Amino acid sequence: MFSKIKYPALNAKMKGMYTKELSQEELDELLRLSSLKDVIYFLKTKFSSLENINENMNRREIEQELNNLFIEDILKISKYLNKKENEIFMDFLSKYEINIVKNVFRNVTTNRDSKRYLRNVDNWTSKMFISLQKINDITSEKEFFEIIKNQEYFYIFEEYLKEQKDIPLEELEIMLDKFYFEKIYNEAKSYNKELENMIGTEIDLLNIITIYRANKYFAYSDNEIKKLLIPIFYKLNKNTVNKLINCNDFDEIASSLNKTPYSEVFKEENYLEHDKNQYLYNIYIKYFREKLFNICTVFCNINLIDVEIKNIINIIEGIRYNIDKTEIQKKIVF
Image (cartoon, rainbow, N blue to C red; front, side, top):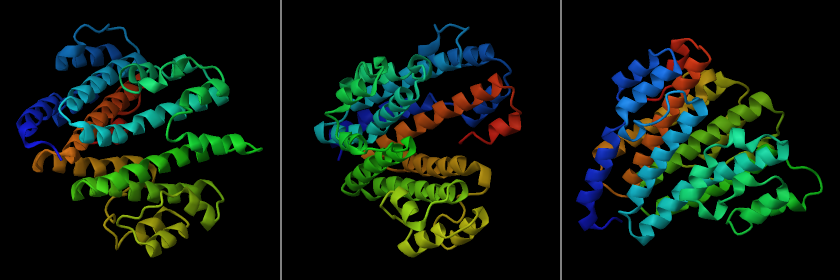
């Protein structure tokens, strides 16, 4: 747990960080804007660190600048943590490392232009995930495997290398996600109930969405679906999971969730991801505001900043493609 001496300093630092985030009124103001230049001007007035950015930036460049601010906040928080706290903090942050690995590997195997699709990789690997430096420059699977060969999750790719037939990228990505969530959940259990609840709830909701998608879009058997799931059932017992697996549509899934803690989470079939994120956001903001500062509230703060960035990017995307404001609003989490 955090040293008591560090509580006041960390408390002030994190509260200060989050007061810089956008309020509901500011998000509404951002939604009313009609051009990227207007968005950039708005961000420059809100975030002093962005006051010198180019007003002609495109969407990806804006996202890169926001990610730079995000990483800076992470590094500031890290300075207030002791060795043990930093270990679990880095394990928690490894979800961003795994996302980099998934995206780079997908680019290499599909021959996409990594410089176009992976602008934020260099941000993370130059400042945090140092062992992955230069991963954005690779051009082959061989180079990719050479860079990640010392990472904990490399065994997943070893299985890929042993297979004579191609393993779908989706399966590899699911295995990487399972690796991450199993590890961070088991660590969370040893810290406090709030952290266990936060991670455990996310796992349950991800498993529900996986079941829905597996049934709707793929002809998977029950056993094949079970292999896709993160093997942790926090507030879902195995009987409920089996019922969900046998559901044929969204209405049946919603009905099966009626007697679970997640009965009110999923409201619309087309917005499952948003509904999951909104439910988790409510947990983050509750713990962040009400609990004493510990590793759980550190996690919450990082997740809240992450949500903020995604909100801004969703608004920018909506403006860029001239999407109706009501549709953009449906993607916003607040």
